[in-house]
Length: 313
Image (tube, rainbow, N blue to C red; front, side, top):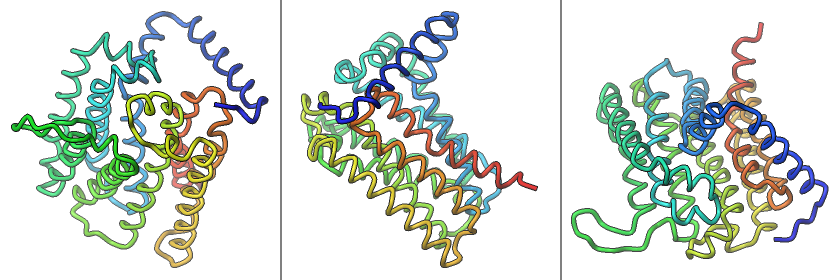
């Protein structure tokens, strides 16, 4: 891959070296804790819980177990996904693959317990909450595996099908993040709720394709078609930037029509602005793994801005 901006590449290398040096100076137990946080998908669970808080704030929903349920589901699904892809990840993400293989049995048990606990808690929200909680797991089976349970028949993984893979991930998480808090609150689906669903669908779509730039060589090797594989890195950057701009336009329209308070729209736009900055570095930043992690922190920006707004005098 040709880097068009050597200054950014140099900065990326320098940042990576500094981070590695810093972690090398930390006690071994701290390093192990960091690896467990990142490689086991715990950090994704924490981000998902923040997303549910964002949804509840946007839709004025009361506190509920929804955030905990989503956090547990995210941990279970992404841990199982990493267990299933450990062999192929050895090419694109060898450190994560090594961690997963080393703790495979423990991670498998923890993922099963997490999903079981999530399903148990979801019963408190009624049948709708239970169905929504089961949805990501069902989608993951179709997405990441090539067999049909109880038949032994082999089919093509949806993870390998161009666009279907990313759309499926975005749809599953947008449904879960938006409608699970509504189910626990017993609230009906409104126009603002549909807007929140569309917002998260577009955001998850973008944040799913950014890591695919890092994995482009591994995906090509195993025949997985993603936007970077099909269109190349430069066009991917433009496509994802376009999605960011469309999302910003959606938020602006909703605020203009009075379906979302301007201060809450400002928080969403802050996250989109952050995403545009990250997306502009796709293919230009040397440390693509760090860039992928930074993209996933978009929701923490929105969360922080919402906290400032809520607690503003």
